[in-house]
Image (cartoon, rainbow, N blue to C red; front, side, top):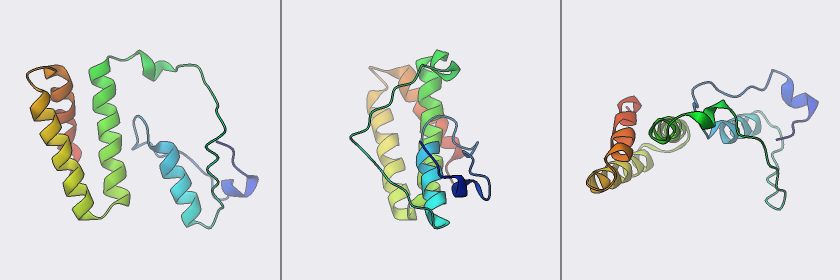
Length: 115
């Protein structure tokens, strides 16, 4: 992500509510709402080294990413879209319980933040 200097007035920051993923999209949407130009260049590929967040267990990562997803849809999607997406999360988690109980538990436990 590259930002022009004027994007930092006021200071452009990632939102701490997004624990894992979606923080970059949220920042771009907030900057765009302030009138900044946002360019998505899908041909560009940039790699980075894994950070400390990559060292947590997969069920913890799934819980954190699901919480970020829920916070993102709460902020940017209409209520009916939120209901459909939360219903999809619940149905998928319930269907996966027999084969992936830890994964299902991680997703279902993250739903406590949804209102």
